[in-house]
Amino acid sequence: MLADNTDLIQPTCSNDSYAGGHFIAGQLVAAASDETFVVTNPATGREVGRAALGNARDVEKAVAAAAKARQQWAAVPVRERGAKLARGATRLLEQAEEIARLLALETGKAIRTECRPEVLTAADIGTFYAGLGSELKGETLPFRPDLLSVTIREPLGVVAAILPWNVPLVLMMLKIAPALVAGNTVVVKTAEEAPLATLMAARILAEELPAGVLNVIHGFGPECGQPLVEHPLVAKVTFTGSQPVGETIYASAARKLIPVSLELGGKSPMIVMADADLPKAVAGAIAGMRFTRQGQSCTAASRIYVHETIYEDFLTRLAAETRKLKIGDPLDETTDIGTIISQDQMERITHFIAIGRETPNVRMIVCGTAPDDANLDPALFALPTLFADIPDESPLMREEIFGPVACVVPWSDYEDVLEAANDTDFGLAASVWTNDLAKALDATRRLDAGYVQVNQNLTIQPNLSYGGFGKSGLGKEASLEAMLEHFSRKKTIVFAG
Ligand code: NAI
Ligand code: MG
Image 1 (spheres, rainbow, N blue to C red):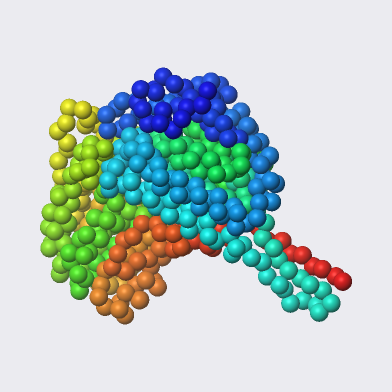
Image 2 (cartoon, rainbow, N blue to C red):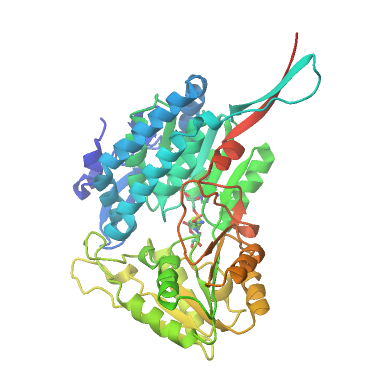
């Protein structure tokens, strides 16, 4: 029996083990083991639904379905592949509200500030890639006049897309849209904390695709993700998540000699110069910290360096503006900030906050108030927290916290602040805040990060190549380059007359 999409958003479906089935070859199916795992609403502690608990046997089925669909899909003319994806993106928009609501239920992210915009961005990424198929061009290669030498681009085959829970729809689309347009078939492994909205969105997209082209499986990393990476028919892995898991995946892929794309987070600096537009920079810090996503972002501007002449003013304003954000029920339209995803992540955040609090001469500024609502479980509501004057060597300045914790420090010497900003293992994003064009140009050139912005802290945008340096990962996403370089291979063909 197939559950329709509406079943998935009803908490009452919690006894239906098919609610979050694997989606393989166009069918919702139970796990090979028949086991499921509970998906919890972090804002209430109640069950949202259940998902199939995948293991190597489910991986086998899903990869087999994708491998079977491969040739047929690669033979679909490229613009038709794009047109199907475009129709899928339109369907996502038509059902945006349902998807956003389910996303809010399982992630605890606020529907107005995060979940609804996320569905729109996911659809936008789909539309963007849908039009790029004709760019899968090759070249003619000057060689010998009696020969015609050309390159063509081919799909890689079966792509494994392994997702995290923080922005699962956008991250899924960043992976599957270029993969599908380039003629690959895909097996998505959802994040165990948030599999249901991803499944719903994928099923909606798949209504436009031949069976087996887009498959979705659920389960935990070692039991389900690892066998997917290791499967002999998987020709490419694209992953967003933690650095240790990224390294494990890279090592497994190396044994098979297959390409990987890895997006592994960051510790992004924001440098505010003395001449910066202060209100704009404060708003940029709040946006950059992704406080409305509880700071659960790989690009979070979590190291904020402010020139000493405006430091206290900046700090006061940042605290005041952050306090205006309402923390509460993710489904409430007036809520700005929802919950942390899970107890594990909450413990990680609490651990860092404890270190910050115990560091001598550090000021801790807690912003906002926890919701007072009997329908909510207070356990996972974290208050935005600023740590001022925190030393460079503090773990809070070096490790990804993935929570609403921002470090704010003063600086006086430009060379020193650039050095401090670059003194990190990561290199995902950075921003500079100034009206001095020469300084902005200099800083953008010298910051070691893949995505550098001036006077803004935008999130991932279609067409802006996105990907980190250093331990932030390998490869680009969101752009034409991402599709060409990471989801196709080049073949050289030489014709003799
Ligand atoms: P994680 O890296 O453990 O999980 C991400 C995905 O990888 C999930 O689908 C998981 O099932 C899968 N996975 C785990 N182990 C695997 C393995 N051995 N082989 C294949 N797949 C595997 O991330 P987690 O535990 O959710 O979060 C931990 C930390 O990771 C966060 O605190 C944050 O610092 C970072 N993170 C970074 C993200 C980013 O956007 N770059 C997103 C999510 C987390
Ligand atoms: Mg993990």
